[in-house]
Image (tube, rainbow, N blue to C red; front, side):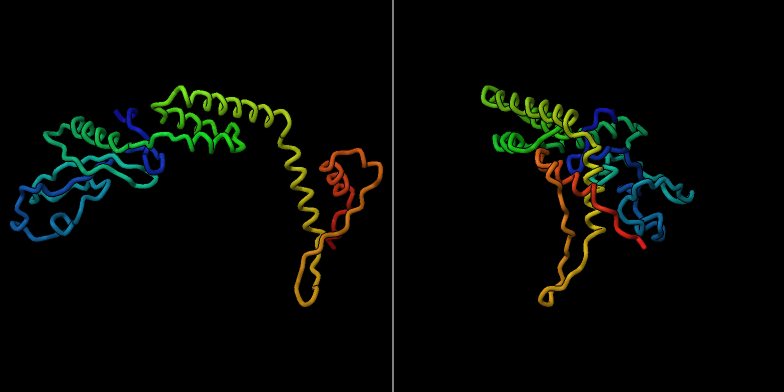
Length: 224
């Protein structure tokens, strides 16, 4: 049954079975002194499977389902006649019933369409599709636009924006930071970057390429 549990509604974490025990409610605790095993124990503690002394009554087994990440959980359910399956089925019905996904609205579609979406947004689009339960004639074209945006963004990302230029740009920025100086103007401190010359033979280059060539031609900072 655990593979049928829905991820946590609060954080999307993995649901896990929790175990504990407590003194049966029908037992009169006044017949023995209060201790860490009786009424002084407090609420059930997750993972409590510690054996009790022989003079104490048999403990009531408890089961629940909780999230490993945020701690959201179902109430503790008693295990009757050692039937853990029935108790866990009851916990699972409570856990899955807690999921209340909001219906998709036209604003959700428009927000995604206007964004610069890419392959990383595919789960959000699928979630939006799963939450759509009406107006298919109106929202179908919107899904088509989203699908086209995802395809185009994926193609552009892989074909025209490889990772190497990003790393090179990061190195150029690092060089500019190393060559920067502090200057005081009218009692206020400012950051001054060096003037970067660019030769005339680079006039036909793209704007970003010309800047990149100019920064690459600059000498490194004297580290001595």
